[in-house]
Image 1 (tube, rainbow, N blue to C red):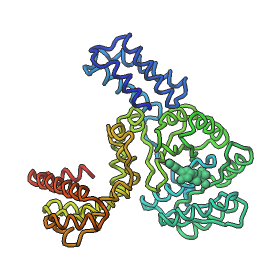
Image 2: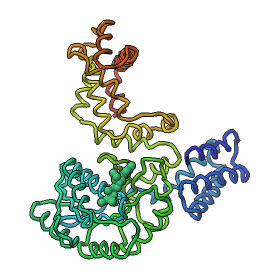
Image 3: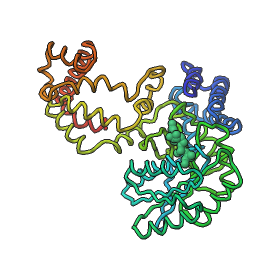
Image 4: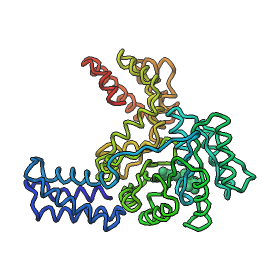
Length: 436
Ligand code: GDP
Ligand code: MG
């Protein structure tokens, strides 16, 4: 685990008041080893750490922070620079704007096509997804299912075995139906092969997309870098999509790929659900690699998923001290909509470590939900009436223990107490909007 290793590396510096050639050398060596372990190419890792070293020694006199903090900051800055510095948006020009999706089989192209469709739809664009994986009939159905799920139309010609023809017809169809953006999902092979390269190259020449994206599985480590290189030599793509960054974060792939092909990473995918997509921010990724959490992405995702009217309604219930179990249930639903609970919590600094070995998922809420659903409408609305005998009934009705019911009642009472205090301080609204 990279962040643990870096923790250790930075700890070497803790307590020492000054950055010297000697203590930097030890720390820098640890940082380099940690980066290499996270799949950063050896040469790249050496370059970064050499820069960190000279930066650190140079800045020593000027800034009065602890050496550890300073090295963290410099490391983060260097990693950010290496990943392009600032975020880069996808280009959407042309009528319709065409986005071509490329990559190996299993890298996550079809899933990403759906996610991108949903992302663009949320920006108010009319989108058409095109199924151009002509080798696997199941791929067409997969995209259709995703399209239905996100409410975006999917164009397919199951009988047609010519990807170029399908894509061309799709673009004509988009023009006719006023769709401004066309996302073309393509076929991939298990390994780079000539036939696939010829096909995707021909699609790029023929369709003249405003954006060609290369999708790559970040878990494939050094292979990801080699594949990126091969695709870029043939396609000269515009941007990279890093997928499967949910499991054991291999942020290293982002650094190496950027370094080798010098193309911006534009999106990262962190799960199988349609919501698990984030715009790539080099600074946030650098923070994440360093184990500082990715709070800003978390907040953005929360903003996207939370229903604004519902948030306002809940807010007013809190302000008037009327927050009840119905509201509690609705909040749980909102949280679940945001995606995998563990991923979300993992983005909060410090939480990743705290949750190690813990088993948190959507199911963790089931007991709570079961108890609340066993309540009568009156009980949900006026939790104060839930006395001992009602608690026994709730335990029996939900199949949970009386201890679990009592715990929930206690948690809920604590929550209400906290809300009341916030209201007294007049800060409920400020606190809520901070939370959202
Ligand atoms: P394609 O062959 O390139 O079109 O890849 P798919 O989109 O069919 O994805 C292959 C598998 O990876 C599917 O089971 C997806 O659900 C899964 N997948 C895609 N993106 C992610 C991701 O970001 N995280 C995880 N955990 N799984 C993903
Ligand atoms: Mg596919």
